Every structure is written in structure tokens, then in C-alpha cells.
Length: 181
Image (cartoon, rainbow, N blue to C red; front, top):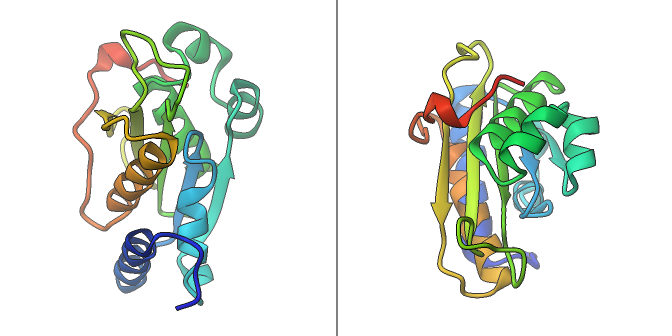
């Protein structure tokens, strides 16, 4: 297949599309640190439009607030790389599309921007399902190997695609880490 993306990313996207097509589900993605990589992988597959509804790249806090309606208070309190923000991004993507499931990704790809508490390679994911209890938070923080910016972004994109598979879920977030959007 004619592609500019890594073969493992395209293969994962194909599995997501096939599985969601079989399940009759549409998907959406809200991306920050991956900068549209997940959306690009999904649209690399011909015929993806029957499953992939929309992708949002909200790199800045202002875009997260303006486009996905992440609360300024949530951004200020928890920071952009947090379960609260990822959850708000996923809910915002779900509310602004016709998707049945939305996954959000926000993190620190590097080479700079990390801290002791949130080093480079820290990526937070959230999954929101249409019709699910909005108080049931499905989110997870991961710490990927810092093998360069491209490596962190690829690992994050692959993880996000896994969360779009029917039946997939991240661990429930601790309520102390999340404030309602």
C-alpha cells in the first residue's frame, strides 16, 4: 500500500477500522502531542470515512478550550497533560461529532518540556463512549521510553488506536484527578 506512515501504525489503524466497522461504530480523536498522527493513520486507509467521523488537533491550551470546550479552570488546575484535560478533550470530541467513541491524547513528546513530575514521554489518554455515564472516567497516564520525539509520538498513536478497539478500555481514573468539564 502507498503510505508515508510507519507500517505498524497503518496496520493498527486498519484493525481499528475493520473492528469498528464490524461493530457498527464511528470514532473520533482529539489529539495534542500526536499532532494528527492518529487521524492521519486512520485516513491512510481507503474507505475510512464510514468509521472515522472527525479528528481534532488542539495543540495549544486555547485550542483545547475554544474547540473542545475544556474548561480554563481544568487547564489551570491540572495542567494540559492530565487525566482531567484528556477526559475533557475526549468528552468534547464526542459532543461535537456523531461518533460512538472518542479517544483523546495529550502529553510531552520532547525533546524539551518535561519536568520531574511529568518527564518527556508522559502521555495521558482518555476514552469517552456515547451513552456512557459521564461520571465514569476512563483514562490513563503512561510513561513511554524517551526514544526521541518521533518515538514518543508513535508509541502514543499506537496506544490511542488500541483504545479505539471495541471492548478496549483504560483503567478508571481516580476521581481526585478529574474535575467535571
